[in-house]
Length: 130
View 1 (cartoon, one colour):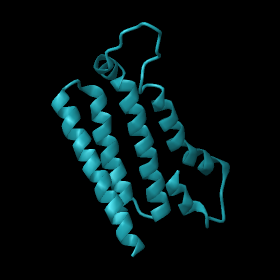
View 2 (spheres, rainbow, N blue to C red):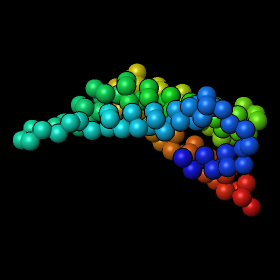
View 3 (cartoon, helix red, strand yellow):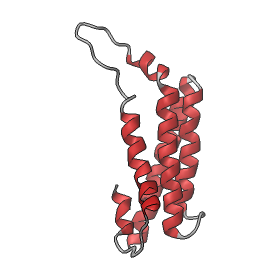
View 4 (spheres, one colour):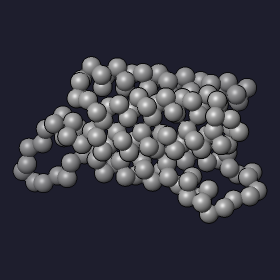
């Protein structure tokens, strides 16, 4: 939502562009439904089993959200080669891959890679403010 401040000076809007802008937060909201299981009293939950059982839906939705945000960034920047847009598209691909494997090492490496990419993105945005 913070990135939406880029649109404060956009004079022309249309309904379909507005719907496209809403896709990213809506998909994040949908992904939240898969984060934790529905809790029943006196039930034992294995969160690791739940994590891997919902991984396809969860990571596909997260990848879509990141993809939509990357497309939005490319549109706002006026170039698909904007670092933020490219970082989001790479992140969407990496995160999407988590939905198709239960390999713990793959999950750990991709999580670290996406975290580093996100940190690099934050630093690059901070450098633009100078």
